[in-house]
Length: 235
Image 1 (cartoon, rainbow, N blue to C red):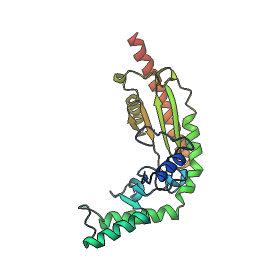
Image 2: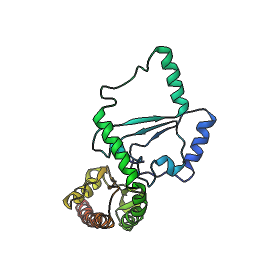
Image 3: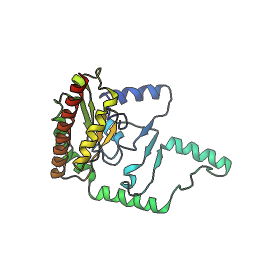
Image 4: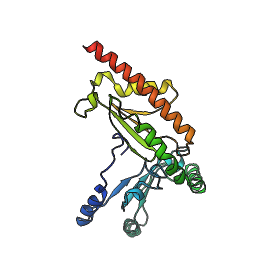
């Protein structure tokens, strides 16, 4: 969802996928590295899409990014198999050099505690519409093909003539131009080719949302002007 440019699944996508996986007894692994712990307005992205995974990968917000830590959640069925087979061998002979590092784990535990104490998902649900609507208001720009997002994650895809089949010349680096314009204004975004992504803090205030929207708009205007120059030079 994130690295590919914030691609949202169709409404019935995961329902149909899960039916096929269940039919053929295939495990479902959910990558929640980006979406877990409030990003979509639910504690997990699986909650938003009613996904019942067998394994879940989590990281990033597990410690609010204050310390490096990641984890894998497994279903009881898988845990039972691991436990049973490990008993036959005498131990669960798997691990990493820094597995279970006490400092990272302590920070993660405190982060999870704060998420609950501050009801972080409530704040996301209250602020997300302002964020999504504010950025999507610029969708009419001649260099924007699509702006898509959910909760506090959003992506914009830059194309020529508002057509997904008409990309800008790669050497123009339109996404990078926009990213540089945002940085000039004190805002960091993620650039992936001619797509950009925003994942702002979950504790944003309405005023901070408005600041992001304003800087996005100013950077977009500057990018439009630069694209006009490049087109003029090309002709």
